[in-house]
Length: 177
Image (cartoon, rainbow, N blue to C red):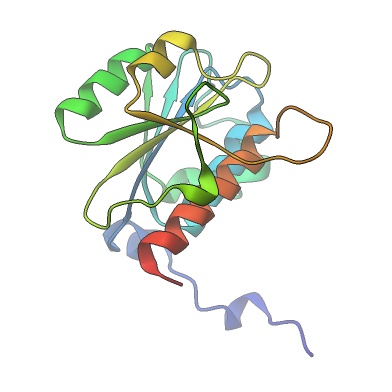
């Protein structure tokens, strides 16, 4: 097998990305402090045509050299917006019929492998702070909570890994690939 050159990968340029139909997913980063995590989420959002990212609270915003290091230009393709208060974003999206889902470990959480998205529904996925997770008041305002099943000794995954797992899982469930 031969590795493909970048020119053989048939990827969209930034203008084509912006015009392309988007996956009905919005990502909300709730007080994410690691610039590398933020950049990684941008790159994953680009890979799966995520509609938008909200950067909330202490979450840093582009342009930023450390975000760029892992985003590799995805901050130019993926639509994003800064909001000081995550709860305000959640409440606004809910008035637009967006189903808000916190990715967290809670009572009555639905395991990711058991969650089936509705094809015509738009979802906002909230990923929280590396230490404290998604704020309780944001979890309480969510329509539901999804938990990523884990079977080892650790209690959590890195936020950029969690975003990659959840976005991929929902993308393939929505598009059936």
